Length: 269
Image (cartoon, rainbow, N blue to C red; front, side):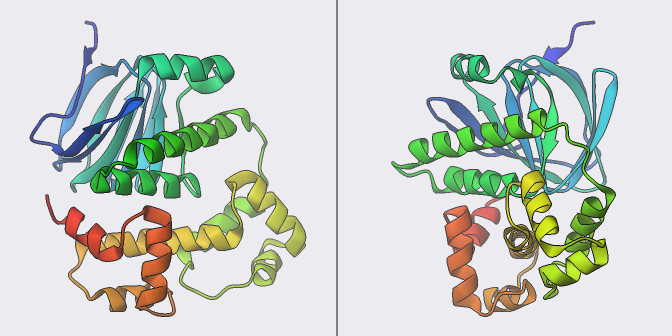
């Protein structure tokens, strides 16, 4: 039986905006939801903002847990099983004509892939623009989407076998991102020179170790803001920022909205 096409229903959609080159939809899916095999005709991104799900596509399967970006090439068919908690996803559907022009420049955009790390900051900024939706958003969304497509192309083209010590370093950063660990200390644990660690880390992730750690702290703060009714100053300190003003400045630089605006938009569901 042929797979059906699928769009989030009105019950799932929190907000949706059509731009000239893309359509952005933020949706929340209930626990236990199962989507049978279906097809997304346009190429798209699924940005897992919170929660997680299992996905089967072709003969392959993947676990999609926040924070994660999933790129679906045009015409991909898959099924989805959501877990025991609600899942919030930002979907970016690309205009087919625009996507075909871009694919002529970078033909590897016909493969599925997943991304995290630095590209997730771009995804968060896109989510911020969807929530802000002013007269400048269309231009900013187009630029950020192009950056995201560039990062996707880089990930697909990069077939380098990264060393085990780099994966261990990334795992350490995820478990200890609130600690004040220096590059020298990380290099010592990895058994490599600090310069070699810094260069290899940037080559794989497209950002410095400090930027990566800042992103992890911002992701932690986002989850605290949306899920807990704590004062923003308390969240700022818990996330490793020196004070609330420093936190608010960094937050707005990255996401285009203040922590207060982010909390207000997150509570609209």
